[in-house]
Amino acid sequence: MKLAFIIDPIANLDPAHDTSVALMEAACRQGYEVFITNMKTLSFRDNKAWAFLQPVKIHPIPLVDGKWQVPQPWYEISQGEFQPLETMQFVWMRPDPPVTTEYLYATYILDYVDTRITKVLNTPAGIRAANEKMYALQFTEAIPKTIVTADKGTIKDFVRSQGKAVMKPLGGKGGEGILFLETGDRNINSLIEISTNIGKTPVMVQEYLPAAQDGDKRIILLDGKPIGAVNRVPTSGEFRGNMAAGGSAVAIDITDRELEICRQLAPTLQRDGLMFVGIDVIGGYLTEVNVTSPTGVREIDRLNGVSLGDQVMDWLANQV
Image: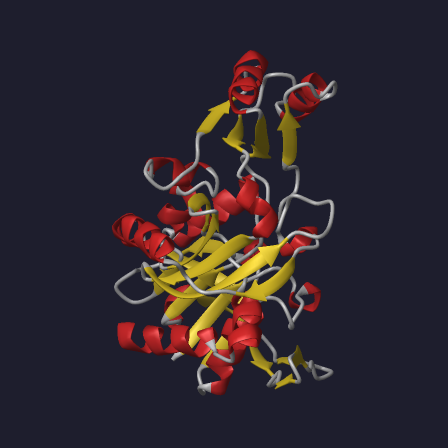
């Protein structure tokens, strides 16, 4: 089996944290051919999507005493060439967000991959449809009280009604730009103006969930089914649990309420071709649906002694 991964520069990836590395390592371990490329090489010609594909070998990264032991070097790249993506069985679209104009253009090129031959994960149309903040809004029974607006007055009224709220940019990642709003904060006007670009750009505002202090749970879903979870606990004085914001990873189980949320999402995710997804849950409420480059696999593997990458590769083999 041949797999191509569209990723950010491999030298910039953290092999002890990055889910793309975990997936590529598992593919190499199972004897599959793995290739890497980046969005800049994606091209359309002869009515097909092409890319400059470089064979890559990921050396085993063992877990010793609870820590990933990264060999140096941890990968080897061979000479690449331009090929139609249809020479692959699977193509993974995994550059990190935000979803820029260039990111969208890349998905348009990927639309020309013949899905009868090659599967793109996640599907280009699914990625375009699923803004990682807005996509959750359709699951009304699963989300906290939420508004999306650029209007300062509406936001202030919402904060006043809730007492406390969290404001998020719609295109953010890793907790970037998330702000805590509270009634009586003398900076609230400025915070809203900065976040909304003075009323031009809508933002998401959600009720503040006190359970956020206990952690922000990331659940990995494969074909709509949960396969693992990790709790991301904020550092002292911080309300964001994102690991990129300094949160620490803690082992945790998936609750009945969270299983029900997964069941609510599954048909829609499958309909939209969103096969590998990371959802965020705080206090039993769905807050985000991550579809571009969901992470958390390394932490789940390390804390639970499992290999989600191998589970994903086994699932792929059954799809061929």
